[in-house]
Length: 340
Image (cartoon, rainbow, N blue to C red; front, side, top):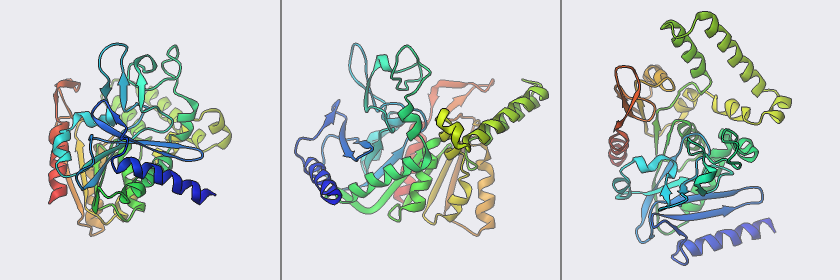
């Protein structure tokens, strides 16, 4: 029965893919849904038709439960798309089918009243800092990678997909997801990492406190206390009883997995792009040393000077200048590299 059920699901979605009843959102993207017993995986292809055969470009978005589309109280629906609206989408689509997977337990389209100031989905508008418990329980690295591989498995079977190449790229938290996908999926041909932390996640809290003390923003006594609190939080994330009460710690546990050892195991061409004014990715400066030590030559890296985590330029005070953004430049350079 399970095999029959899966076959029926795939048959239904395949019929949609072949041009019948395409679920087009906002005249910008085609919505697909893979339904399972305990999960529903929604993903979008950024196009409105499927008449051209191209390889897949899967972009893994960063953290937080942001919907792919926002429906305002008045006016037109707006696409977030996990950050892809910052890219030169048409440039990517010249050569690839651009795909983004919705965050787990997060609606594809959310009304503005259910978004907080950071555009994260909140079930209760009166509690803007509280995400759904279902999302927190699903917010861990292995789950993201497993969901993505199911999507890629489905896409490989579509007539409009060219399987000679498969691009997987991710920003910030998405770089961790892209890494795990590439480590375990033999069909990935190119890996793109943007503003990645080679040593996980939680280490940046420690480094941030140290830097704050060094420049005298806080005292060393305060930095010491913050560091010890971070250690305790990390200990709690490994305690099963605590995890039952504080499900948000699951993300800290899983996403703090160091990526460097995984990168060194990956044999496909890997592209690492990172901004210099970014506490999350500043240890990327050390990564080429490890590739040299291990006689690996599959890494291409590029520093983006005087930019922050989302590739905005920073001013003399180190603050982001939101009028000077460089995502299009950054992503186009990666796309050009992938075509070579």
